[in-house]
Image 1: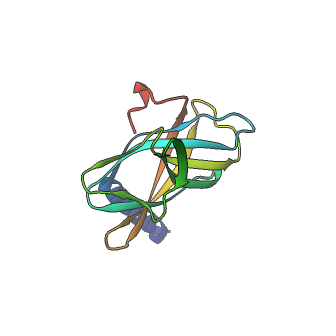
Image 2 (image 1 turned 90 degrees about the vertical axis):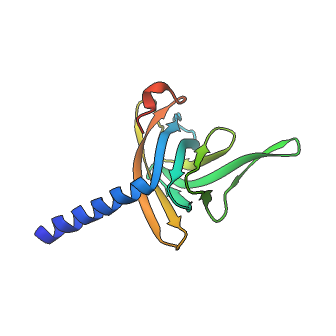
Amino acid sequence: MKSKILSLVVALASGSLYAQTVGIKDAWVRTSVQGQKATVAFMKLTATENMKLVSVSSPVAGVAEVHEMKMDGDIMKMRAVKGGLDLPAGKTVELTPGGYHVMMMDLKAALPKGSTVPLTLVFKDAKGVESKVEIKLPVALSMDASQHKH
């Protein structure tokens, strides 16, 4: 039993060390209603070294991907970010409406305001080492001052 507890403590400790390598602030998920198949998550990511956000997942969605919205001539296009989202050392990368965001598709249930959504972020450093960070995001209509704790 002691070895199981020690393994858990080591796993938690390494996760918390890694969480300090990538700061996550102002994270939230937009509400959804019954029958709605997609929603989005937003946050601010700041890495202490060059990293990439290579994947995202959540048990509330069949598919979660990092997407980018940008203008192509007069048309706003949204597409998945291939190869991961670059997080340059010391620079905050914002996932915001109209820019980069986490697209959550094939929702399994409605996401009402006030609930929370678990999200797993997978980062890769310059050496190719992957690490996971699990967070819980508040569900809201929009970001407000009460959510700046994340």
